[in-house]
Length: 227
Image (cartoon, rainbow, N blue to C red; front, side, top):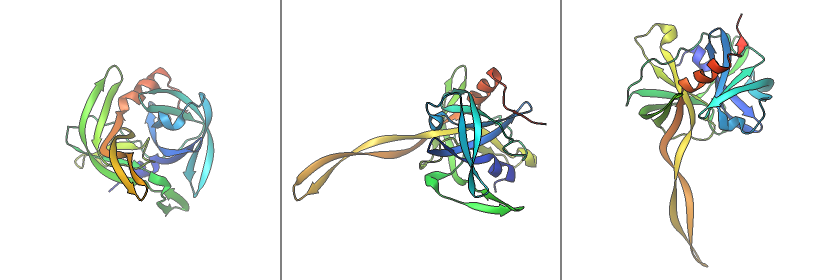
């Protein structure tokens, strides 16, 4: 079962009409918003994001602190959550179960808690198929999962039931997208035959390890300061 801090740190985002997912990460007394760089697009360093909470879109000023791979680190002029921090993963083995959270296809799932409406992310169970080292930043993660649009920027989490309660869920990285291949086929009509190509989801999802975000944070430790 997902912990409350994991749920409330996974945000439904809209940036320049692109929708996706983000994750709130605390590091050295400051709070950052992590998401996929391709959602931010070619926006300048300063801009705005929209976060869906309390059944509406809230517009917040944000600054891009940089990116590594497809992980973007944002500083937002607001504390996004007061829930307990999610620690980084210390060790994950090939073939180990991992969990991907996000908001696919603009679908809504939400709950009511303490007078607030809380968006609930969708959960996909996956496993770590492979990891490719990308010095000096971190790893590219290959996950066995068929995902739909909207999961981009969502957290990849590992679960350790033997760990203390606040540390059972830990952050491995973020989702970037999936690998597709083109399928060739033939369409037959009364007027003849036509060759067509259509993309097919291979079930191989690509992510980037948290180390990419930490590298950016070390270069510009300018997140929202936690009191």
